Length: 448
Image 1 (cartoon, rainbow, N blue to C red):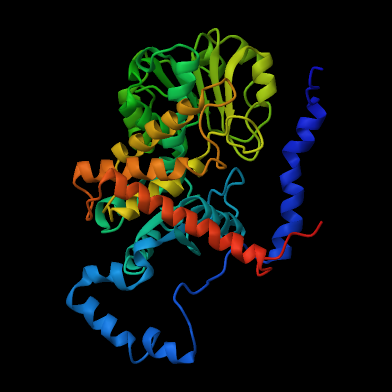
Image 2 (image 1 turned 180 degrees about the horizontal axis):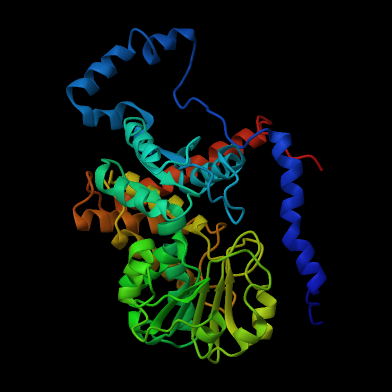
């Protein structure tokens, strides 16, 4: 018997169900994270070791050799998730308090998927310089920083400045994480549709932090800039657009590397005959029209990754002729989302104590993600691994760490075998801790 396909009404109901559940369960748990000791406390006598007087010995050891902070404290595995709440998901500038649930959610993904201890810090400032200074003075506590949900254009300056001036890895997941996973997805989408990366005609809809970073990483990964067009609300971004150099230097930089024909038309016009559409613009649906997809090349690739609702529903893009469709949502096939990137990328970075996260480390992660999916068998509805495939995260972490060692930005050199063992053990332990807390009832089951 042929299995009945869900109706559009059922698909829509499924799409909006997480919103309903979130409003019930967030108040139930009153937040998603808490602090739990990682050291043994056999009795109150142990406080003489963990606090005064014993702790002074650790303090003096670090004072003599600052690198010992990675041995004596949680710094080596501690990441700050920092935001000002100015561009939260697809919701815009909703403020730091309203952004806090997202940052907490990021922290549990870090822990469960990558074994990384992360803590949310939402800053009550919109000033880029104050943001930069705050991150810099937090460096003694954290082994890395994940910047999150910061509006453009200041997100570009914040990231570039902090990467250049900080002594710990600084990463903007909306830029680098989204870019790495998108590159992974595109590598496999092009294999499925029998295209070469350097020959594919690529249109990027939206010129925010995510798509600018995707464009940069695509160029580094082999896409030909002469065959790439970025489109914003004004049309195709061309190097001859008046005022571009003075007003939007990041777009101006990309215009020098793409679109040599200086196309300045609409998104609909840009999509005609294109092989690939990568859209990270405003939440949909109906931001990208079916008739536009229908005019793309045969067996086109459509990534519509706006959250919480994609620019076009995936089934409508398929009806219009797209061969491979991806979104940013976990409840649809082909989730091209940074959740399968940043936990492992930080795992690999922290394990070798890298001082930065380079573009080459991101590409290494993308290629390993693509290889993981290929090893299982690519399909139109399976481009990249899902969050449920836990074994992918150690593999990705190893690829990142080995690239950091190769590039000379790692403080610790590990063999591939040792790096894999460390990553697997750390991630397994993190999951086991959460499962134990649930089993013992310390994390209560959600209400029915």
